[in-house]
Each structure stands twice: as C-alpha cells, then as structure tokens.
Length: 219
Length: 240
Image 1 (spheres, rainbow over the protein chains, first blue to last red):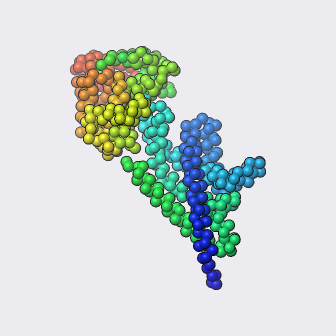
Image 2: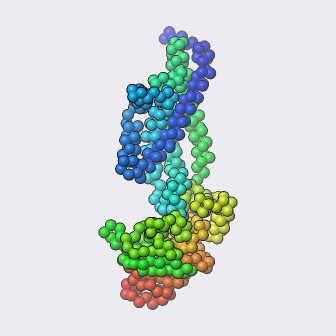
Image 3: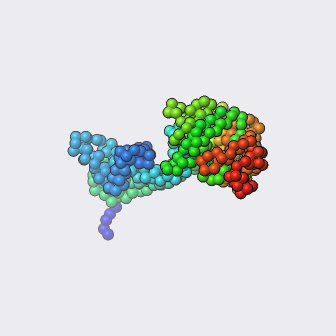
C-alpha cells in the first residue's frame, strides 16, 4: 500500500459537492412526486381501466420493473435523441427516474387498493359521495398509509439511482464527483466523500419520512 | 314514500327478488325478516341503487331510483344506510367520520358540519368520543357511529341491514336502543333484522321474506303472535 491520500482538493471542492448533493435531492424528490402521480394513475388503470388502458399500464409497469434503470435513462437520452428529441440532462434523468418510480410504485399502490375492504367504498357512496370524492377522501388516504414504507424505500432508491445521471452528462452528485476527480486525479478521495454524502442524504430522508409518518398517521 | 312495484332482481341465473310489491309510508317503520338468502338485504341495496334491478320499478318520494336521469348521489343523500359491518373510516376521527359528508356532499361550512356531527354523535351517546379513532372503539360504538354518520345527512329514510348481526351479544342492546330512539323521532325506516322481538316491539309492520317473495306482510304484533302462513309459522318457531 503506497497510496498517499491528498484531501486538500476534496476539501476545496466541498461546497461544489454540497450543491451537487442538493441537485441529486432535487432530482430524486421531483421524480418521486411524478412517480407517485403516475404510479397512482397506472395502478388505477390496471385495476379499473378498460382493456387498452389496462394494457398500457401493464406494459409500462413491466418495462420499468424488468429492464435496467440505466437503459431506461438511455432511452430518454440517446433513444429520443436519435429521433431528434434532445432533452436536457436534467429532463432525461427526471423522465427516466419518474418512469422507473411510477412502475414500481404502481405495483405497491395496486396491492394497497386491493387491501382496502370493498364496503369502505360502498359506505362512502351511500353517504352521497361521488366516486371521485370517495377515492380522494376515503380510499387513497388509506392506501397511502399501507404503502408508506415501501414508498420510503423507493425514495431512497431514487436518490441512489440518480447517480446513473452521470452517464447522460448530468452533474448531480456522482457526475460532479467524476468531473472534479478527473480534474485533480484524486479519484478515490472524491468518491469516498461522495459516498458519505449519499449516506447522509439517505439518512436525512429516512429521518424526515419517520417524522412525517408520525404527523400523518395518528390512527 | 318508498314504493316497489313488481321488482325483479337476478344475479346471473339466480333470481333473488321475484316481483316484490311494497310501499313504506313516511314515518313508518317496517321490519323485514326471513332466512339468509331470502332477498332481504338485496332489496335494501336495490332501494338506494347499490344494485341494479332487472324488472319493475322503485321510487323514493316519487323519484324513479333506477332511471338514467336520476342523480344517484342526490338520491342517496335522502336515504341513509347502515350495514352489518359498520365500515367506519379508520383514517378519520369519530368527528370527521360524521362531518365529512355534510362538508363535501352538502357543502356545509366546516363549523356547520362540525356542529351537525357533534349533535348527531351526542344523540347516539358518543359525545365524549369526538377525537377518538374508530379502531379504538367497540363494535357497538362503531355501529352507533355509523348511524350518526348516516343521520348527519338528514335523510328522509334510513335502511338498516342486519346492523346487530356482527356484534357480540352484550353489545346488541345499545344499538337497538339507538334504533328505538330514531323510532321516537319519527324516522321512516326499513330494518332488515334477525331480532324478532325487537321487530315486534318497534315496527309498525313486518314483512316475511321467503325465497325472493314477500310471503306475509302484516302489522308487527299480528305477524309474530299470529302468523297466517305456514312458512311464517315454521320460520318463527325456529327463531323464537
């Protein structure tokens, strides 16, 4: 072992790494929000939609869950690029992660919907609530509680998956680390520090999720 | 007034209601008794359009329940229903369980909805449980909550579908007492029940269902004490 650590370039770059970590967080949170919206829609299409809708949802879910996330990112980057659709690196990562999140979350949501007893729906409709009101006020809030922890997992997964963004030129935490490391040749030091950033970011998210769950689910 | 005219209802090949004719006047309490599978509960479901019918017609206050032009959500505001399983909403407090529908369906203000809910909950004896979650209450309490929730919509009619069947024996009394209270308030009710004594004491008339037809329909005491039809006699001798 004759490797000599040089931390000075890393320490100098800490502010850059910190802002890159925020970019990672931003991409993960936004892709998660989109994933929740699309995931809910996909789950409902698959459960209650007519044949074309249910088929569409099934194809999406199958592709998202059974192909590498990296290829999904490449599809939105190089794939669409080949047809003249050039998205910015941020949009590519956002689309790719949202596509992937939606597929996984849809299956969680589907399980959640099926776990809500059918009479809950009937009871709400008997009070004169419309189908939409029933879903928004009665069914979906209960589904969210059931899938809350799987959702937290997916959020963590989104943070870690966003590191694939560096392969489509996105300067999130990994992309920035790669850039700085190759400028200074301190590869090991930079990626070690990046790993610490990822670790802290995930811990922060888990802590926030825990606090949020105590606020949300008092029953 | 609730009116059923030769109502037919089938599930696939199985005909569950065979030409039911029945009318329930404002202020009347009708109990419906009969063996399981005789069509009692299905009839309730047809009255508030939870189930479609294959023949005949049902009207509530002159409004055809199964007509395409009928606004089903509007209709249901006028018909409260309580089920065997109380179906309280577990994610809402007792107060919110009751206040939600007045707020989002009747568009009452939050304050108004709250005071309606408090009033109804006090009425059924749950005034001290407002901020509790239903999962922490007994079956009898949850069933009374379900009754308060239906009453908060100020319906003209109440349908009860075997509301004591899923309760432990010692909890049946408190729910039946609540129904008695409603009777005193003059509520129009159709009560599907296995509690024959309760039906005799509280209702004006009793209908005995047998295999999808009304086998006998008579004033309550008469039907229980002096049934005319053989099938009614057999049924009552088994359950009394």
